[in-house]
Image 1 (cartoon, one colour):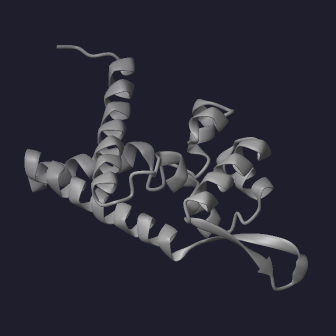
Image 2 (spheres, helix red, strand yellow; image 1 turned 90 degrees about the horizontal axis):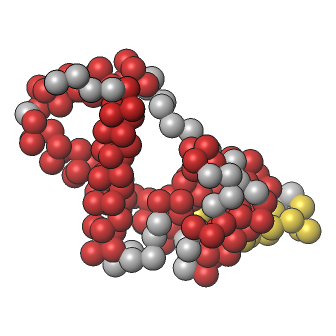
Image 3 (cartoon, one colour; image 1 turned 90 degrees about the vertical axis):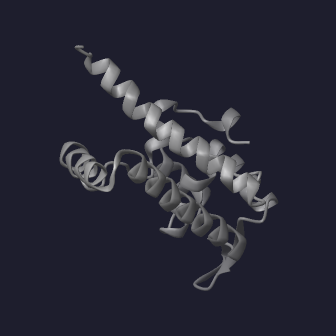
Length: 160
């Protein structure tokens, strides 16, 4: 059976969606029922240094207004905070809170478990070969933090 390039792209996207949906379901089961994929992208960008709405917007390839809405949601839920900048008292810097770090670490544990489930499903050797081939095709760092931006430039209505 011959498949098209579009079928391959949809299968890869389906794999991503399957993993993300399972992770979100498990996060909810573990008490984090208010976390969405974009929240993970945003918290990772903030942890990596995007400590203002403008910087977060650039990092995620979304508008400053969308970044501000994301920040407001994350603050309301206790995942990020604004702290005074030690170098400039007029400036407030974003930081991921302990709760936010707990969500990120819990999500990583869940993804490790999902990876293991996939490995068991097709066999460890076949899965290792799959990962090796996939890495050779997409690179060792296939996704940047700005990934949400390439699908839709204004994510504001989908952040909550």
